[in-house]
Image 1 (cartoon, rainbow, N blue to C red):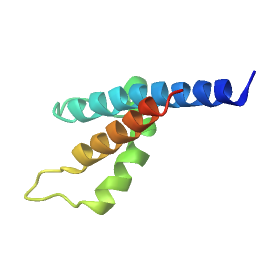
Image 2 (cartoon, helix red, strand yellow):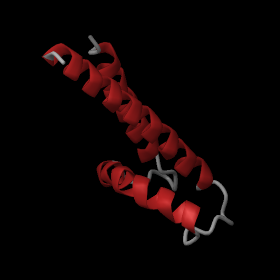
Image 3 (spheres, rainbow, N blue to C red):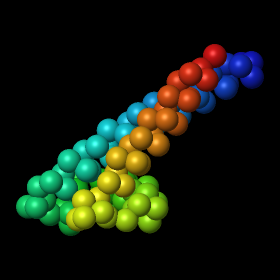
Length: 91
């Protein structure tokens, strides 16, 4: 296996990871619209544990404005940029 094949494999794998993570973050954000979701239940708690550390990075940068939390939009935008860069870097 040559170095270009390894690099292509890594960028493809990371690109796929960021696309899946993007979907998980979107699901997490959409579920916050439903106040009856019990975040202690296993499927929801796992989703929260996977996505909250990433979302908290952006919550510390952009505080809620007028009761609306716009930090997930910034977080999703950042994931799109990184995923796009990895996709365009494929050899």
